[in-house]
Length: 344
Image (cartoon, rainbow, N blue to C red):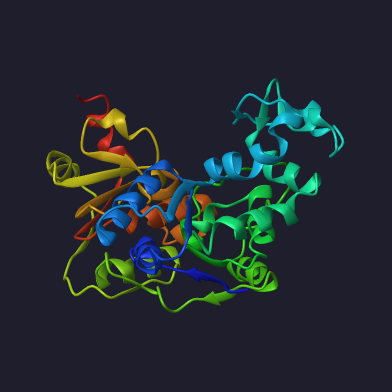
């Protein structure tokens, strides 16, 4: 079995590393989390291979889980009519693992329990054989976003003859495929423990090949390391600046510049400018100058030099936001943007 996971840093070329490994003479399956990344992968593969080979399949995780794994084995038995992305009810959680009622939300199957159901029903060996029947290579992008039963499912599925190549950035974990009670609740609490899970599952862990960012300049990388406590080095040769904005005039100047994207914790659309939310801009690679707008709690931590002590999910979203910058990076308090809230 040839299994490897690469822990990368932001802007190091995670997606490119997958695309460059695809051999059109072999049958390849590429799995990612979001439809945006799925579309990006399709474009990159078509560009590199001058079209999209019939030997290459690109799926989002839940499309793969539903169509390739669940439907062939359990669709008829469960009589389901689609997937429910609702949080499981307390009543369903009290049902036995073998009960249909544990997995169903009306006539739809809970997304967060599909993988568990396949394991409970004893289909993992048949699923691994099915993967080997159709694919030689399996690639998984943004692996840090696998959570709940889905993480366990991925490690179990990888025990195939097919090669498995996983790529992700531990500190860009801002979403999860699913949650179900306490299952893997602490999975992303500690980097070393997370890494150990892959090693124990037989994966070779690569921490060096994608350790430098080709997007962010050294000034931005050094600032991320110093401010957030996340190690990231730069392979870029550009010279940029990092500036903290503390006056209304400076914020108004940046706000009025459409070439500077403004990144907010949430509800960026309320500010009527070129903007996005911190976590939701993950995967976007076209920004030049970026202004990260800190909400009151984050600004208070930042002012005390304690931003690295923010809740992990907040720190990770800030890491995503800071590392979008190819050019200059600006940091500003949300309070100085309030006059622009509601602008159109």
